[in-house]
Image (cartoon, rainbow over all chains, first blue to last red):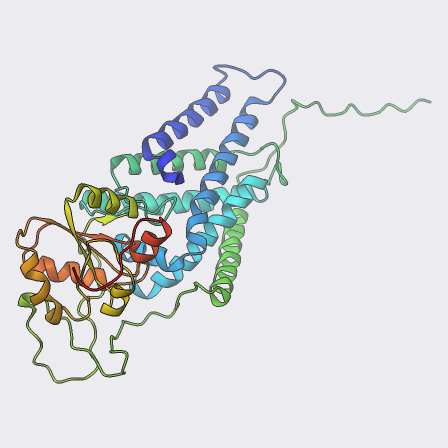
Length: 182
Length: 213
C-alpha cells in the first residue's frame, strides 16, 4: 500500500488542522498538560510531524530522479527547462536533509524555514495548475500516484505552511539536539 | 561562613531569548541548500539511475545512426524536409501551456484494462514491444507516427474512446508524442501512463509477448 493511499489530501488536512488546534489550545491555555510545558510539547509534536512528512515525501523520489524529472516537466511549468534536471536531483535531497534536521532537532528552525519555503512554492505551483485545470498528480509523496491535484491539495499545503510557520517562530522544543536553537 | 548556593533555575523559569535571528537562520538555510545540492549532484553522478544534468533538447536518430524522420502529426504525412538530424517537435509543453493529457498510474491503467474501457498504445520500439507489453496493447512507435498511423488508426474508429499511451516511463517522451499525434488527429480522450512499462512490470501485472494483435 502506497503512502499516498493512506495519507490522502483530506486526511492530511485533518491532521494538520488537528495539530494547529492542539498547539493553539496549549498556547492560549484552553487546556494544560500536567507537569509539562504545553507549548513546547506541542511545538515538538509539530516539528516531528513536519520532519516525518518532509523526509517521507522525499523517499520515493531520491532514487528516481528521472521519474521526478518527468513529473516536473509535466506539472511545474514555471521552472525553466534548463534548470529542471538539477531541480529534480536537488529538491528530494533538500527535503530529505531538512526532514532529518526536523526529526532530530538539529538546526530545526532552519529546516522549518526550508519546509515553509518549499510549501510556499508548492502551494503557488499547485494553485496555478488547479486554476488552469491542468491534470497531473503533484508528486508530493511519490512520483506517480494517478491522484489528481484539487483544491484539497492546495488546502493541505496551506495548512502544512501554517504548521511549518508555527515551528519556525517557536523558540524551544523537546527531544532535540538543539533545544533552543538561538 | 556558609556559602549559599544559587537556586537552580526551575523547569518552568522563562528562558531569556533574543530577537528572532532571521539572518542567522537564512544563512544556515543557504548552507543546508548548498550541502544538499552538493550531495545530490555527487549522488547523481555515481548512482546508476542518475540523470543528465546539463539541459539539451533531445535529438532523435535511428539505432543505425541515420537520422529519423521527424514526427509530423497532422494527418501523419511524412515530412518533405531534407534529411538531417532534426529536433523532435515540441518535446515538452511550453511554459504556460496547459498539458491536456491526464496522467495515470499502473493501478489506474489496470482498472481500465479490467473494465475493457480503453485502448492501450505502446509507444516503444517494435522490438521492445515484441519482447513484452501490456496485454491488448497496440504498438505505435512514437518516433515514427507516419509509419504506424495507417496501421493503428483504422483500429481506433471512435474518436471519443479512451486511449492510453505508455513508453519507458520517467523521462521518456514517446508516449507524449503519440498522445499529441492522436490529439491532433482529433481524438479527444487521450491519457498517458507515466510510469510506463517499468512500473507495469514492477506492479507485477500480466504481460504478453509477440507482435501486434
